Length: 159
Image (cartoon, helix red, strand yellow):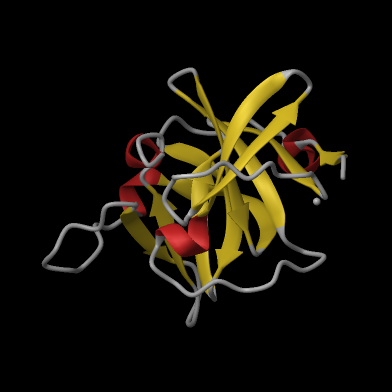
């Protein structure tokens, strides 16, 4: 992947208004047909076409590291981390760079969708008997679309 950056600010500028404290802004993205959201509080930037340096002896979902303006950032493929099959990267594939508790991490996603405001009171737990390690909530956005929320604390511990 080479060096083309897209700032999260350009996506979020469309709706710059006062947001109630019960509402949180999420960046939504697609991975294996699922719509997933991560709080924009953790999103640093979105990058495309960046070269990933492969590192040996790591889990298969750890794709390697990138050097982003002098910072070494580990990169994981969120699709592989969720146990889904690998696919070839396309023109919509990108890396979302997150900063979680002063830890930088990049996640490879199929495509970025949009930034949306969600009332936190409407987020439901994931209805499953075994605790979902990476997903900690969900909300129905329309008849067919369910938004799953990344558990950012668990995500920061995956590599």
